[in-house]
Image 1: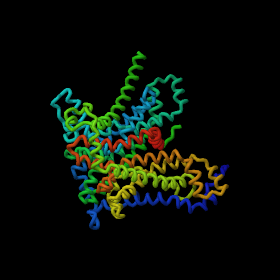
Image 2 (image 1 turned 120 degrees about the vertical axis):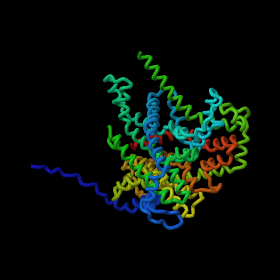
Image 3 (image 1 turned 45 degrees about the horizontal axis):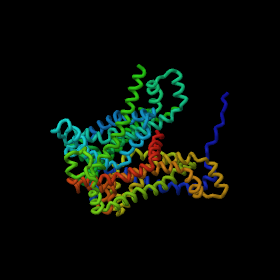
Image 4 (image 1 turned 180 degrees about the vertical axis):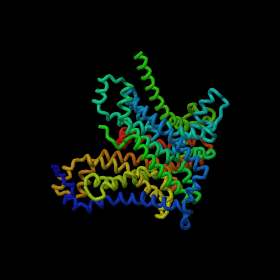
Length: 303
Length: 277
């Protein structure tokens, strides 16, 4: 005979809470208004008008998938996609890799680790615009630090890093490549959360330093690494200042990014086209989240 | 053998530390140092120390341009938007954390998923919205846009903060006769201090440094924030490098000073957002 297990009664709103409904929805109202005003309506608008030709003054005219067809047959867009792909690879393997390396180094608490951690944050508390400008000067041919150092050895050396192919792409990459403090802090946070019993147990079983890192610590901070990858890929999708204030997408689109394309389209009053770029940015963002979440099994708990 | 390995690891660790420090500090020191050099000195030897300590460039900048105004605009846009949105999101996060009501889970998911929307993709609608409200070329238009910036992160951090406050306190407050608003304002809000600080710091930093929307939504000198003023100077002083470096110094210094005071808190805030992973 099957025994019926009495189910726990479904948590029902108590009378007190029901009396509070008025207040509950009132408290939610400001957030809902901001959400509608800056997310729901704009996103809907972007999606709808991406299928139109629109100059912002006259009414939008429906033109099917023309904007998308134009995008995928334009040299600038395809280069921007290729750049995003390359920058994405650099971000996942080198940027997040470097940030993780620093986190593991600081976790060993070498002398000066707190100072290093504090100082590493400085480039991130400065406006990205100012940082781009600083790098524009560092890579300047006439008075930049880099060429100044190279000229000590080779007095006739001269390269305009931000304006010459193929250097421009790598010069832009360098402005963010090693500045991975967010990655470091997130990963370090996860490392500090590993229960000490776990590490102790592994040590008693004879695990050496490298084994400890490879088999215990690295797998246990995969959530943090996954989060870092999402953050840094999202930053790549919306990379603007580092490019707009250095190369402006040149030379010959070699440093083009989607936001630069989008802004260029807006200044040309091609709003439909701009919004088609917006839709694609949005979709790429969603795809990144889905893939990384899957790859790092981030919704599973370890402890 | 073992000691060799150990020394090598140690050396590697110090190398990484040194690399990080040089990469983070050197560019800034170089910019500040160059602000005290003459144009000729900058061009002839970019690495040399300044020969005379001259404040001329700074004096010129402050006499010619309204730096206190740019600073004030930045402070206004970042400060007001952070305070207002912190209150909005605290209210929202509070009811999501503490009450059962239809649509609770859905709203939470919708609010936090906004993290994934690249801000730039909404450029045109937001531009049209601000223009439609008659706030184009006004610091208030920029402030309005900043309200939406930290939504996902704030709701997430604040919800966790409110959930950590025991419900028994609310019940005790109810018995004492405190109403809904009072329970929120005098009991829960003060106890969620560290979550509020985390969300507030991250939003303020982001808005203080924001460049993209500020550059699209403002035009005139009187509405410029510090990052926008900086971009304007590069075209203005294209051949006066001393002035350029001085302007850069003036723009980045307030942020660094602010950070120096709230250093631990800023780092903890960044680390706290990672826990959601």
